[in-house]
Image 1 (cartoon, one colour):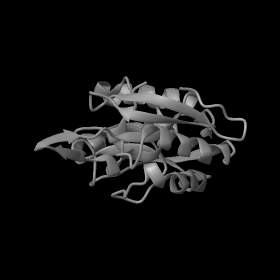
Image 2 (tube, rainbow, N blue to C red; image 1 turned 60 degrees about the vertical axis):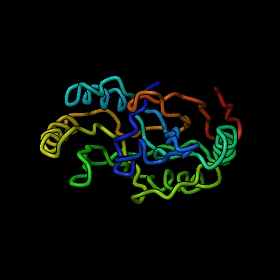
Image 3 (spheres, rainbow, N blue to C red; image 1 turned 135 degrees about the horizontal axis):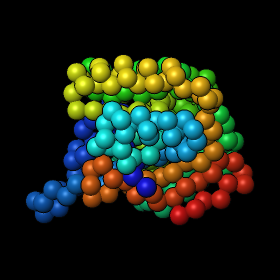
Image 4 (tube, one colour; image 1 turned 45 degrees about the vertical axis):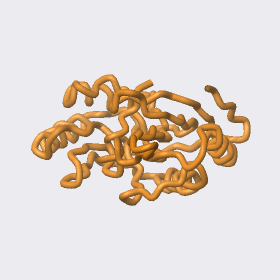
Length: 209
């Protein structure tokens, strides 16, 4: 699964910022993130809209980021164990989506804001941003469903208007279920991410890797 990491302002320059100096060689460290894939009608709408306004990222799945990209402060095993521990204590929940907004001028990103129950995602974010996953993020965490990060602010302004018109015509429920989180690792391609583990919320959640 490919995850569109560079769609949040706190991911703007994540690639190459963190590196290890080994005998004079700078070795970039892999980035990791935690996302909730959106696979319902809303997710299909976002993926179709992204295909229309930014075909270069048409392959990327709809998602809500819970932890933006970061280097680990421990091992992958420790990070996954932390996610499993937090997820077991959190019940699945629904969030409602609000208006189409943007992060301009910080970044040419267009997104749908999470309105009702956004606090549940913030709680998960704060509980998970510790230990092996702790990271000093550049901007405050704001739950949202990314539509696209385009190349210029001018293009983003056009994409914003298109997205608002399309979203206004969307007549299906604007509520999505958050019942599983997926831990992903940066691939060789800056736009590609590898699913490492998917963990369901709740006591009976069973991790799949």
